[in-house]
Every structure is written in structure tokens, then in C-alpha cells.
Length: 113
Image 1: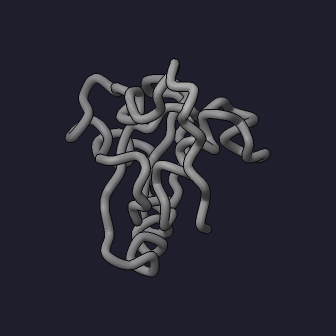
Image 2: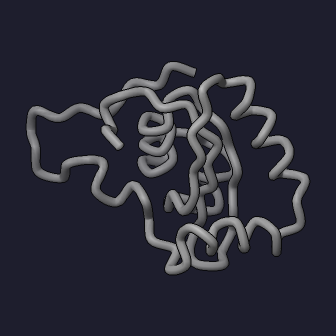
């Protein structure tokens, strides 16, 4: 995925493997993940250090992403873990290479929602 382009998605951030989970939706996944990683959003993910993107699902419309987020938030924890492990069994941070570390011309993505 190109981290410079908006991407409508439902996503799960985690503090660590089998750690604290946060489910969200956004119209700009790269920008939202950057907000979580940089701790620029105060609240749950900042408090519990949920900075690893462990699962995401693309949607064509933000209403679909929000609907999916609300459904997943009602799930049992075991179901969420199974969802993550089905596509990301090693719990890799899926956004680990989205943001250049040593590029002085780079600036963080701008949130749109």
C-alpha cells in the first residue's frame, strides 16, 4: 500500500502480541496509523501504547468501514485474535515500513477525518 494515499479501512492496533487491542475505522489509514504511532491522539491507544497495526480491511465507503468497526467491537476477544492470526499469524506490524526513517523531505500524512 502507498502510505501517501488515503485508504478507507477498518483496522486493529495492538500493544504487543496478544496485548491490548484497539479497533477503529478511518478514511485515511496511513494518516491514522501515523497518529497512533506518534502518540498524537490522546486516549485509549496512547494510554495503552497500541502502536502496531496488526490487521486492516479495505472498504469502498467510510460507512462500510464504520459498520464493520462497530460489529468487530462487539466480538469476543478470542474472535478478534482469530481474525488477526488468520492473516497475520506472527503479529507483524503491517505498517513498519510505511514511514521513511531518514528521508528529510518526508512529512507525515495529513488526516482527513
